[in-house]
Amino acid sequence: MKKILILFIFINLCKSLDAQNISFNDGVTLLEFPNEYLGLLHPSLPCDYNEDGISDLTIALTKLRIYKGYDIENLESLDLPNIYVTNPLKTMDFDNDGDVDIITNSKIILNDQQDQFTIVNPVIEGEIIEAVDFNNDGLSDLFTHTNEDNIFSDQELIVYYNKGNNEFEDVVIHSGGVYSGTDVGDINNDGYLDIVAIDELEDFPVIIFNNEISSFSFQRTKHLLSTSHTSLSLVDLDSDGDLDITTNGVYSDLKCIENNEFLYQDNAIISISTPQIIYFNHNDFNADGITDFVFFAGTSSKVNIYVLEGKGKFEFYNYGEIASFEKPAGFSYPNVNYIVNNLSIFDYDFDGKKDVIYTDGFSDTNQIVWYKNTTVPSNVYNVKLNENTIILSPNPTLDNVRITIDGNLSENITYEIMTSNGKILKSGQVKNGFIDFTSLESGLYFVRFNEIGILKKVCKL
Image (cartoon, rainbow, N blue to C red; front, top):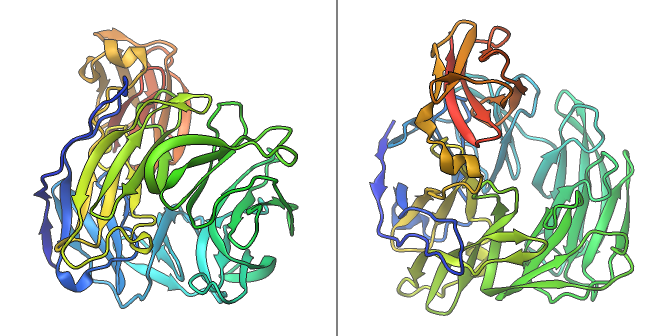
């Protein structure tokens, strides 16, 4: 196994504009690859597959590679069998055994613990674009897209319902379109996950597929959008409890469709001014409960990564620059096909704040770069309270952990106990200054104190 040391890179940190408070450190190069991988099409997938509290990276370089983190400055390649995939999508517990599995565009990598894996090759058409439980039966289903790279052939969106024992039953939910963006979410708040897609062949391209448990019905909205969309996302931008629709065209502003009672009757589109946007992702980077965006924007000579802080109600501060890249010699840049999805969001250093991981497969030296989120959270308690004033003891623990703030036992503050992959195992209020860990198995956990937005590590013996 080859040991990869983290190197440092030269990129400028994010600039604050118009009272924007979100900021990132200079980029840190996590991995570098030779020119033979120039034009890396798909992102690295930051994760913690072994739940040890140290970030790992999953990458498709002609075949799947997993780089195991030993500390924040050391990644080491695992010796895996040949697993030919082009896009690692997400990590989740696909088989409900308590371990973190890896979902790729064509295969499911089941984690058997101790760096051993079982490869599942589901019999499907097209490429996997999501793995979720559509019918609420406790089993994760697969959502696929056929003929994705051929705009001259009929394309299909298919849901493969999981019947157990790695067997799936397919239902074609739509065919004949050219789908440039899809996302999954409960659009009508009925407790079942729906699908939203952009169909480039239609004047009114937004299609909403309503989940009817074993099938889907669909309806187009009346919103007229430009073609060549590269991103689509469902996110509640106005904090009203409904998922709104956000998309963009190549080199265009963000376009938002408000989810309200007029969703299928109104044609109003909210435009958010951005500089020649190519691709976007979103999260809450400053812990204020409002969605922020991170996005690529490019010209013929360079491409930038920007962050856009939300004010709420579809309003935003001016964007700030995270990084800027010059066009490499002899490469027509930016090329959308090489950029889409190459911005991942993950708490790489497990400090409770989401960072940006950028896969650069176009430069003279291919790199995976980590931009650490250095934002001071907006929550007023975080301004007043330093992390070191919260003490958890004993740590490691066999049963109970004492919580003290500024030297005093804590009362009534709410907490969540999570795995390193973000799964919440227990939540409640601190009682008499203690949190009970007795029911949890031995291992490393993270405790988040909600009122003050602070994350602490606890080891259960």
